[in-house]
Length: 188
Picture 1 (tube, helix red, strand yellow):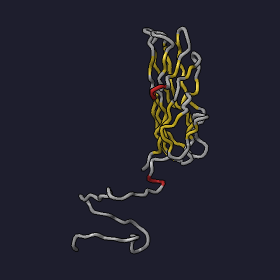
Picture 2: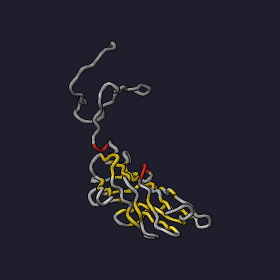
Picture 3: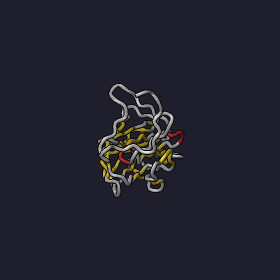
Picture 4: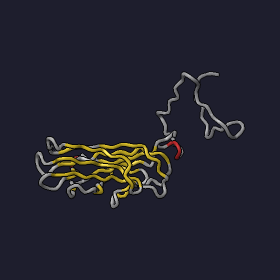
């Protein structure tokens, strides 16, 4: 068969079901000049990333919801900036991540702190820092974990706490120091 252009509206198998193979081993199929529509099982969505638009003062040693009030992106409208929760609406395994920048009220005031991801109100994984032998000014604990979510009722959110020796700790919200995101993992 000579090289050329194949123009069709629909390609199906001769039996009406089965696998259609494009190319063969060692070949590359180039689709750079068009677009590809994937079915929902092949997309890493729902997905979102949120951050804080302003800093949040928290009470000493009190686990507090981190107020992610601004979305960088939200493919399916599954993150709520009022409750700071992600409820995906699609079941699957999700890669969930956060980084929370905690700051003392002044230099050498920050003793220790932690952040963690919760699923349906229960703590899953936590990241801690401890500066008690040499207090600091700030820290950015981060957590990432693969979590099974049923889609319709499961939710995830982020909490943090810290101890400031003389004032109230602050969760830094400026310059996107504090972020929270998730995306569905395909193929598992």
